[in-house]
Image 1 (cartoon, helix red, strand yellow):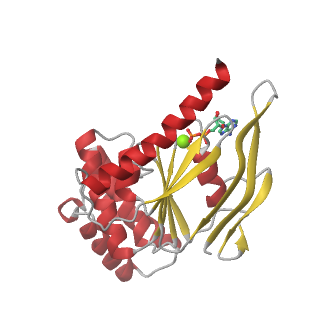
Image 2: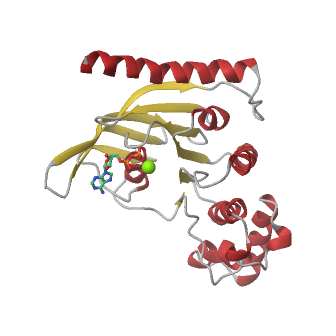
Image 3: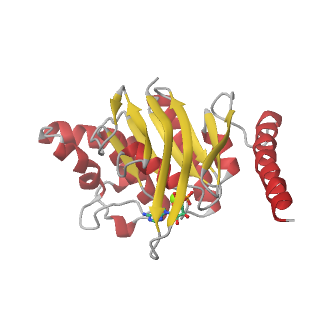
Length: 257
Ligand SMILES: Nc1ncnc2c1ncn2[C@@H]1O[C@H](COP(=O)(O)OP(=O)(O)O)[C@@H](O)[C@H]1O
Ligand SMILES: [Mg+2]
């Protein structure tokens, strides 16, 4: 197994020094090349789990392994795409895409070639001399994706990357990331609170619930790409995921009555 999350819990202290369990005994395995969505409502620990797997933070208890090595710190072999794109405003599109390649000490000609290839992959060849401020949110996110892919990472972590985009742009970006995954078969761990987004993108959906953050269930999405959001198969899986959340709500209701 490529990624292993073994009995991981994470406890934070709030500003009054009271302990708060953000993740409770999470177990998870992920295979190489899988597209995984972490799905759940705000506050259920999705970002916490993503950050632990990416090595930005350490579990309070439990262990995480990638390729049989325990995760202790972020690795340049894995890249993270945040919601706010993280582009450098003073660099044009091409120079932004080349950023990660510079850190890898790749020659100037090679850098230029690789950057052009990935800028084309995300459909921005005409904009390679533009600066981020001249681009729409969707285009900026494409630049961030091109930059992430250009370094040929083993894993891509995406934390609600399309959260700030309008609904139509968001759907286009989902199509694009799905096509890219189909071509490149990278391991992608993608955080979302949007059920349809998860059903559209994932091989497996990890459903998380809050209070404390737990993995409630894992749902396989055995559908070919490119997926049709209106097909019966799609709607069936969407309903199945939906029911998972509804059941949780009913349990909560009982508890509070
Ligand atoms: N660095 C932190 N310090 C204290 N509490 C945190 C920290 N990060 C997250 N939390 C808490 O842990 C819970 C889960 O947060 P998070 O992982 O961001 O959820 P999600 O991404 O699913 O919205 C939240 O209640 C949040 O307030
Ligand atoms: Mg989050």
